[in-house]
Length: 288
Image (cartoon, rainbow, N blue to C red; front, side, top):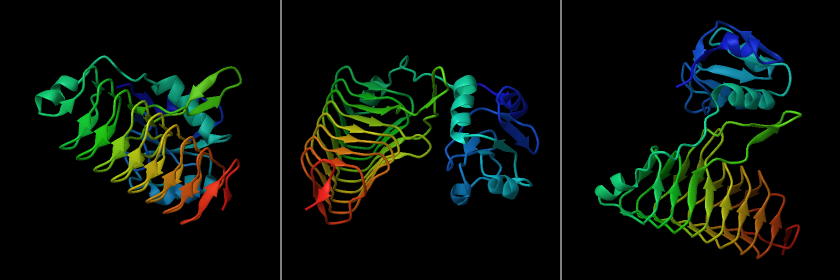
């Protein structure tokens, strides 16, 4: 594990001040899993209530956050875009590639799980009883699959999302720290991709059915008993309610909320929130 002092980070990063004492840190953490030696990004004051451990180092661009935490912990105060600075620090000091060197599939087979041929299972994976993993499935990193799920062949779960910031000459990678959590009795179709969360988890509820060739972006939440048919693209930070139906080839813009029991028609492009129990069709989506 790579460790570095806050003072060194500040000295090598533009537009950043250290408020409070220096300490050694080992990387970024999600706001719910923060500890003494991790850095948490809190963009503004509206997110501060989510911080449970106020001993963690906080990086923010909001002076109100810095002032409230001044006597509780160390604060890195950004004088420009804090999101860009998070990506800069992560890329320079803490970035590491997903590791594919160790496959734990045989260990899961030896414990009685049905794991298909050529499946890859990474080190931070949890499988519930009765869950079946098909051939050529890859469970990369921080994946929790509950009881009695089916993961169809050639699906990838727990891969990083495209969280990027432009430096002026190249892209910097925003940290992808979350997990993928899948509830009970859910099924993921073949050739689909579910990306792990950035600063929060990507979560899929119970009895969810996802068809083939679907892409689920980071930080997405999908409620119980939702149906995603096939060839669907769900962008990052989308919230899909319970018993929602997404038709073939539909596309959901990032940060959109689709309410409970809503229906999205075939080929629909959803660019704004859909209220519960409504049906939308077309490009852009409109209510029937």
